[in-house]
Image 1 (cartoon, rainbow, N blue to C red):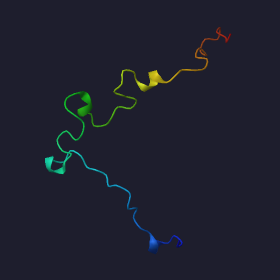
Image 2: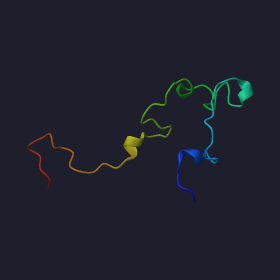
Image 3: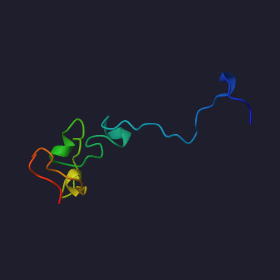
Image 4: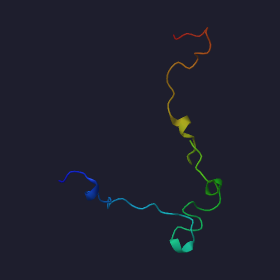
Length: 78
């Protein structure tokens, strides 16, 4: 293999181009642009951080651990 130099750099052929969505029906991903119909999710510009479409938010599904009552000086670990 040759040394890396400016005259022998190639594009990565396996990399896919970014698909622009919502740019007309002729593009194949126009109108609803893969977001579905109705619901708030189809209208948001950006996805809400920490929001999932499941019953519980991700933060509620993560197990909690450690001593949580550190702000109360009278409480101690047993």
